[in-house]
Length: 155
Length: 155
DNA sequence: ATATCGGATGTTATATGTTATCATGCTTCT
DNA sequence: AGAAGCATGATAACATATAACATCCGATAT
Image (spheres, rainbow over the protein chains, first blue to last red):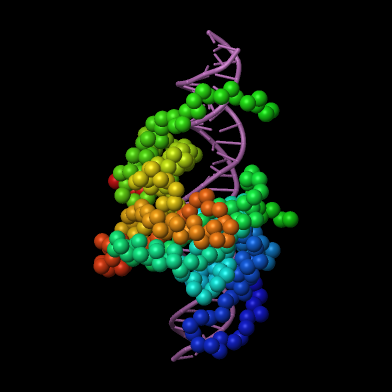
């Protein structure tokens, strides 16, 4: 991968700029309307010279560290973060029919969870909250469910 | 060929008894103090003649269908259910230090989640709530964290 | 009894997901 | 220039999960 590589570190060390691959992956995640697996991403990037899983995983790691992406545990897939400000304690509403994922935040839920945990002396460092079901758009429709997952077949 | 409709199994047998393998796996899960992966289980069962992943996964499927076991998404592992009555909407507090998992229930959290979802027209069929952190016992201790996962080495 | 069906299992192979390791090269700091 | 740090590349291994197809068994219906 040839880097155009912005020669400007300028801003002090706290966060170095994202690499080309990292930006690319964040783009792909943002444009996808549904979570993408590491292999989905790899598939889309092969034509651009990325051809090994570790590259993808490393980029995802970085993006998650910076709060720019989330991992959806129950799908083994990744999405871009809508609201990069508060990256802790996000919850996701995943439509099992059309595959869309809505990032949801509710302070009460957070508070309640913290409360419940604290009551038993448990100290929470990270919460995974994933709601599966049907989104508003899909709720009326027939429930014979569809693919809801990237296929990877080149269109 | 579409079958012409099976002639009604009398009283739809609500639950046939568990098979030997299914019982065995439920046992193993109950005795383990931490979640076991499908391959952990397979390892323990090889000496008993079970030697292929599908068998294990199929048994787990059944157990989960009956609400006797849960899958911990963030660990890709399984635990027996403490309270087989209400198998929906359970939450788990997972100690990343010692590996224990506490099944937690709190009606307020459930209500809140349902609420949040409903507000946006989302219909929840299954919720995954997994809290990672340190349990009361481990909270004071040094945070240099340990294995917290079955090794599979022969005991 | 016999045909049949559903469920569970076995067997083999493969798909999907994730990580370790080692090598290389670029950028920045000194 | 040299050292440190980080991103990448390449290869391989490991871990997790499912597909496809065959067999077996027990319950039923005819």
